[in-house]
Amino acid sequence: MNHKSMPDISDEQIKDEVLRLHQAMYEKFGYEMKYIRPPKGEYSERTLNVSNSLGYKTVMWSFAYKDWDEKNQNGEEKAKKIVVDNFHNGEVMLLHATSKDNMNILDYVIKTAKDMGYEFKSLDEFEK
Image 1 (cartoon, rainbow, N blue to C red):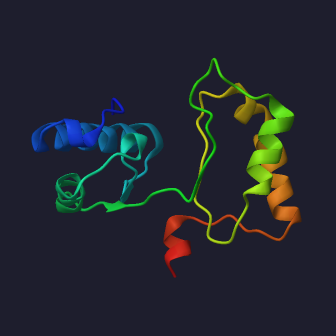
Image 2: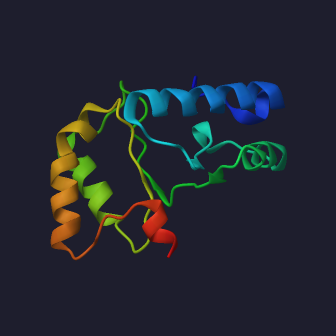
Image 3: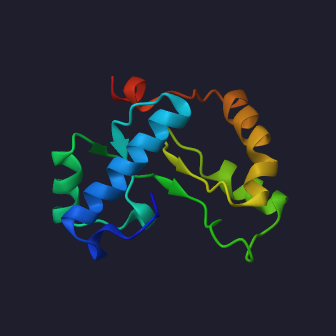
């Protein structure tokens, strides 16, 4: 809910953060969360166990574009190149919504991936 590093907080705080996020996702989008990606990709055996005990499967990314620092953007052309050059089968791409570059290139990235023969699937479809 607040993007806190899970290893830095207690089991009860993790449960509170995750369950409040679950509730917000359901209220806003009618979506029941089944998957979770730990904030900042920071986790431990303990935090994975807490997430699992709540019924979530932890999923990490296979490509992350360093885009989270809004003051350190590389520009749209460089962003396009970095993202497209890293396409790979089974990719779980991490792009942050706070990046203006990402917002402006997302349509291009999706169209380019499809033109290259990639498909977009939900995690449920991906597991099969």
